[in-house]
Image (tube, rainbow, N blue to C red; front, side):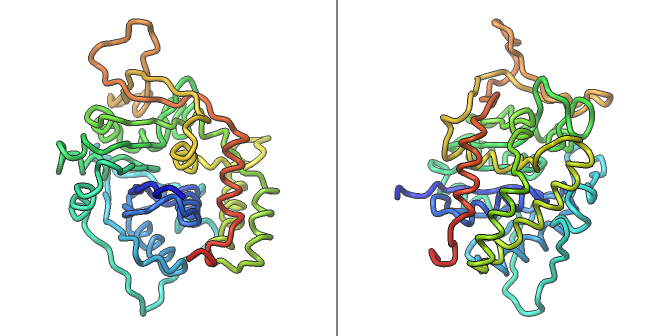
Length: 324
């Protein structure tokens, strides 16, 4: 196998964030250099607790956890989504940490030396609000502009939002931060809602993963179906007729291993920060002669769904514990 891809993951670790982190832990082709805990689906203190819990049950104390943002750069109190991700952020689970355990977290500024050591081959993957990632640009702009690649789940183009009629949750939660990263980063791929909403994992797929891990007894594998069932319940009530639970964040990792499964386009992009109905809306200039003062980044427009499913299922239908 070729050298694994070095990644740092930023997220707010509700259900789809958590399953995507599990996916990375199940694979040998990702080397996770750190995970940053952000507010978003639930408050940041719960995100930190959830990551410590995952660290505990997986035994992956080698992956450092960093303390991300509590609030957005907009100075608007964040809104949380217990009806989507559960009151604790992990669907039906109420994670409890043992009193004994080497649970350690680090301030966000301690991430900068790791980025400096690996920036030439580093991919930053972000699933949540962009507040913490924007902070790294404020702390170390020249360094962050040299990072090999940033892949972000966020925005929606020619597609309804999932927080307002126009805005997707990650960009809506902190459009100032989203604009800052889009403005100053040099190699961003935006994976928007219009692509990720189609990344459906069906109940049958969840059952297949669960049956497999009833045999392996992998604690991460055994959490997948209850998480997906909780998520599916929300989506079936709010999107009548939907055939599964969309794994928005998992599409980012799929892009890293199979960019050829995506149709992308280099486009000038920006996020609206003016208060009003369009607050947090992402837009791209598709015209032949686009607006010149916008920064051009890569935007995913379509994805090969069958290839995504094959990659997702093959990631979980393996015995992680035998490989460790």
